[in-house]
Length: 120
Image (cartoon, rainbow, N blue to C red):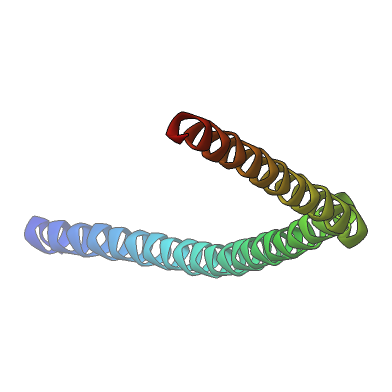
């Protein structure tokens, strides 16, 4: 074998080894990428589940808060308590207007008496 044939065999062997190494590295990287995609997909699914759980919990908390607000409103403003307050207001207005009416009646009587005395 001459030197050029030996060089081409060595170059062929080197190219073959480099090709084989690159092929193995490419396969290893492909496996890593597919594992990462699989793991990322699983992690995303897990995160989606956690987010859904969080929003479900939030919706439940909102519903409970609404129920608590209604309960507080029902206990704080009892109908009997409000009825009593309205009755007191109504009585105050009724008595106040009746009192003002009687005072206006007395004032008009006093004015008419004064006019009669001055007219005689």
